[in-house]
Image 1 (cartoon, rainbow, N blue to C red):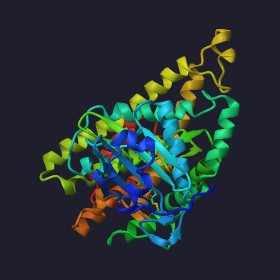
Image 2: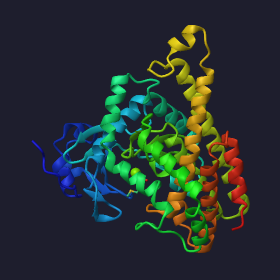
Image 3: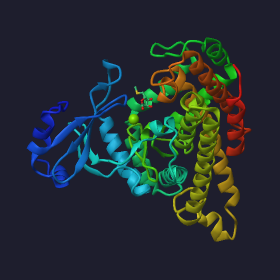
Amino acid sequence: MKNEYEALTLESLPLKLGKVSAITDQIGLETDKWKVKEVGDGNLNLVFIVEGMRGALVIKQALPYVRVVGDSWPLTLDRAFFEYNALIRQDQRDKGIAPAVYYFDRDQAIIAMEYLNDHKILRGMLIDGRVVDGLANTIGNHCARLAFKGSDLYMETKEKKEDVSLFQKNFELMGITENLVFTDPYFDAKMNNHSEGLDPTIKMLRDDIIMKSRVQDMLRNFTCNAETMCHGDLHSGSIMCTESETRVIDPEFAFYGPMGFDLGMNIANYLMAYFSQPAHRKNRSESIEYQGWILGVIQDTVYAFNQEFNNLWKTERNGILYPKCLFEDQGHSSDHALASLLEHIWKDAVSVCGIEMHRRCLSLAHNADFELIEDISLRANLEARNLLMGRELILNSNLLNSVGEVCSMAKKFNEKVI
Ligand code: SR1
Ligand code: MG
C-alpha cells in the first residue's frame, strides 16, 4: 500500500525514522538523543544530518517541487528513486566513491546514507584556494569506470537495455538539463539572469548560429546517444573532499548518455574555479600559483581517465562492442578502435565543457565561484573570459586534440582584457 508522502521536519524525522532498523543500526535507538539539523543548500532537496548515540548519517528527501524556486515549479519525487539507483550503480562500478546507502523509501522519497563528516564541498575548497591530493586520480578513474562499466563494452546487452529503459524515466531531471544547460543560455529565457556588463558578450554568443547549431548537435547527442550511465551533474558541488580523499555525491540527474558528459562537466567547473581565482586570492602570485594547480588537476584528470579506460578496455571488455573475437582472438590489435573511441569521448567532453561554462553564467543556477564576487565589474570581466573560452571550446571541439591545448587556451583567455 502506498504510504502518503510527507516532507520531514526536524520534529517529525525521529518519530518517522526511529523504528527503521537500517537507520537505528547506524545511529542508535535512542531517538530522544538524536540531534537533527537541516543542512540542504542545493537547488532541489531537503538534507538532514542526524547524529545519534552510535553515529551519524544523512537523510536526503526530495520535495515535490524545486526547492530553489518554490512550489510554482513542481518536480517528481521519483528523482530520489533514480538517485538511489545511480548510487548503487556508482558503488558497483567504482567501490567506495559514492556515499554508502543504508535505506531507501520510494513513497517518502527518502535515502539514508553515509555522513561524510570530514569532507567539505569541493567548490568551497576551490574558492578558498585549498589543495586536494589525489583529486584528479579519483575523479578521472571514477569517470572512466562509470563510462566503461555502464556501456555495451562491459554490460550484458539485456541488462544494459533494461537499465537504459529504467533511467529514460528520469525524464523530468533530464528535461531540466535539456533546458537549463543546452537551450536557455542561448536565448532570453524566463529564468535566466546574468551579471551587469555582460550584454555585449552574450549578444555575440546568441548571434553565433554555428555555435548554437553545435550546441544543439550536442543536445541531440544528450537525448539520443545512450552510451553509458552518467552521473549527470558532476560539478564541484557534487564532489566532497578532505585534503586527501575525494567522494562523489548527488547523482539524481543520472541518465544514459554520452561517455564524455561527466568528464566535460567536471572540467568546466574546474575552469570556472580557475577564471574566478583573481577575485578570491589576495595577490597575483598566489592566484597564479593556485591557478597552476587547477590546470594540473585538469590535465591529470584527463590522463587518469584515459589510463583507466585503456586498462578496462584491455581487461574487462566483455560486452557486445568491439568484441575480442573480432580483434585479439584474430591476432588483430584493437588499439585503433580504442584510440578512435577515446577521441570521440574527448570531443564530446570538450563540447559539454564549453556549454556548461555558458549555462553557469547565463541561465538558472549559477556557480558560487563567480556569484560570490562582489565587485560586479570584476565579476563580469572574469565571467566574460569564461564565456568566450566556452565558445571556442564548442566551435573547436573537433580540432582540440589534447587536454594540454585546452589548458593553454585557458591561460590565453585568463590574460584577455575585455
Ligand atoms: C533547478 S535545478 C538547477 C541545477 O541544479 C542542479 O545541481 C543541476 O545542475 C541543475 O541544472
Ligand atoms: Mg545536486
